[in-house]
Length: 600
Image (cartoon, rainbow, N blue to C red; front, top):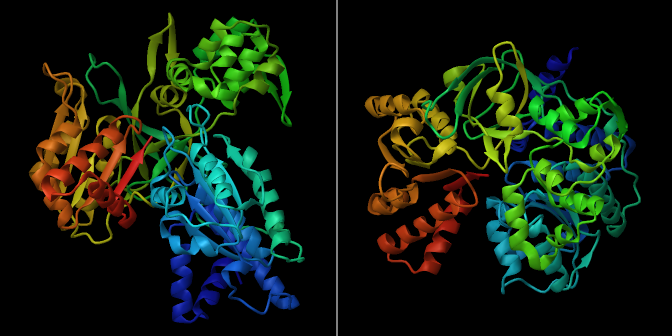
């Protein structure tokens, strides 16, 4: 009996309620999570055959491990899901729950808690964890003398407040009387380098604390369940380039590209709101700059972390060359002996650090603080290359086995030198002769409403408009009954109106009902989307009161904050709410899934 027939036969033998429960569990999970569930199921079946499954399947809170996650891009969910599967396979009673689904009253009863949470932008929690983080850090949080906990923070050391939310929660749990199962973990963009050993330690501590002596099954040796989806983050699909064109005028200040990639034969599926992950290559000209600056031979072989490649290969494919980080600043300060540079990393110098991270790329730091570097030392100091995520600009119902992207190309002069973005330059240079390594990154919190009669409000200046192109295509294909309102902004109407012809056609055919435009450089006074929000406050508030879903995509550090502030003003002026009530109202929309943000 082949695997497909065996699977169908097994599913047919399940009762209706059990099958429905299984389908609900699997809904929204990616291949990695499904593989872990398959491994846990196989281990559970083995326990049943050997009679080693604990008799009690439901345990009290004090006898279980609760794993909470707050995730913006899916990394925290992935790690928490893997840890949960590992713990369940070892016979622990486990509760895996997303932060916005966690009953706050349960916190006082918890005895064993693991939190996996990311930090976004300028020390902000992910949207699905905002309410819970505010509760834990606030005055209403209970004393927790019986709690044993562990916190894994995810972050990006290119930002000044690295893993700030993880640090805050770790310190707060201790302040409330809890004791640590494991020390605080802080994972950078190469997440698994820290997350894998940390979760192993947390798992062992939880296993000992909960009193199980049953050894964990060796689930890593299990064969994955056959799946149509074989391509993911660590096994990307080589997508052919079907189209690559500029969608701004030649005199625009920045090039913006529209790319169409083929997913034919990949088995990859996506929904509007998801992202494409792209593994980039650093520009050859940038690699040459590094080799020239440090007087290194690109053909010199470097052995590092179990891998052996020529230096040029390391710098082109394997190392991050365009994003500065705290560890890199520390390494350069140490190598050059520059105490002033080292001082930037002191807690009281956060403003200087912020300015440095925003202004410089790594090579600028090397130019300013020269020192002798060997090829081995350079590879060890630089961070591993990581994929970049781009919001998908197409509906698969409309384009079939294709995926479309909207990419702002980073290419500028600063400090007397040319600078590039790794992924955007890589994508901009691609032709129909190239194949790009890609995968799908699901974003379950940025989804169109299941009820197609609900109205949709979309706020996406610049390339933040990308997912809303997908939204409008999807709602057109499904003949959705709800109305659609887009707020778009950029610098100039004549040169930066992305997808102008498509939006105008959508207005004519009724798939877009309203379009508000804000072009900041076309008049004497700068106009941004938040001003248009205030101007349309009455209608915007009415749409939201009638059940509309609100979406924001784009820059996290400025635009998203300004839009959030404008929405609070809308609630104050149109709803007669106080500022505190307006903040709670918006927080309620977030909790309900009616206010979703895809910000970066």
